[in-house]
Image (tube, rainbow, N blue to C red; front, side):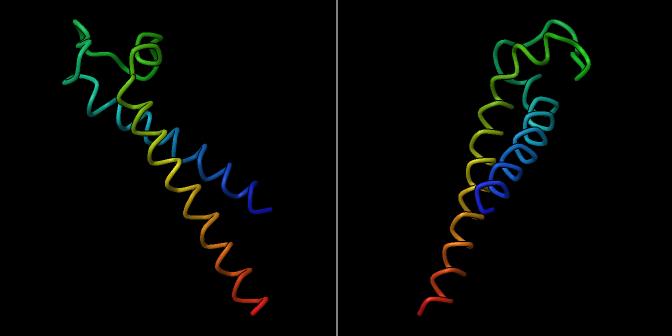
Length: 79
């Protein structure tokens, strides 16, 4: 059950971070698009490396925190 919660948490945080990171960081980091790109265009999904990196880091931290908190709960019950 812990793995399911951690996976769902990773996916949700990754998607939110990817979209928001792309909206706010993509216009300022290379490769800078020659025109404003929206979420509904393919260029956004192909060149949004900053959003992908931010999503991976934040999603990983979120999943790790869920795994860590569940480990503490299990450890507290057995002692």
